[in-house]
Image 1 (cartoon, one colour):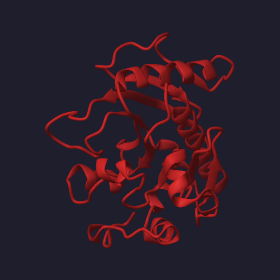
Image 2 (image 1 turned 120 degrees about the vertical axis):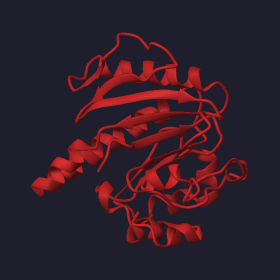
Image 3 (image 1 turned 135 degrees about the horizontal axis):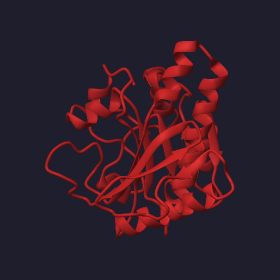
Length: 232
């Protein structure tokens, strides 16, 4: 595993404002939580990574990106977004020790971070998704398209399922609340605003066809041909 594990929060409008509002919301949660700590007292700059600790993930960081983030790798569609990167070491350690309880606990920590990021912005996100290697590399190398596109989101749809997904109410209406909550996933969670989070499996190194493709089938989605040989 590498440090290229990401959570992308796709949003409308000013992504810098969304990132700062999200940071402040996470900081409020940190005030009375020993294992959550914002390393800078205040959100510093949209031009740099703002670092924090979230339970087992000691080196998490977030930063906003506009739709044209840079001319190189684009693991997300051309939409404003806030990207959270985290060190997957807790997953690696649990897998090496064959400690299923630690693996599950790390997945729950990450799920709670996604829920906090989802609800922490000034408005509902358009979609939230998390990927790990090798999916991230395939996205960066343009071997596969992102799981959503501006066109799919305009139609309140996604292209295909991935490891971790946060559906806002508009997408929940498309696929059906009970359909999403009953997806063949390790965990599904309903959010206060009516959104739904789906985590395919607690093991980010096992994000392969049996998990995510089963969710595709459940939601009536056709994965792009490029994913058929992918181990995610």
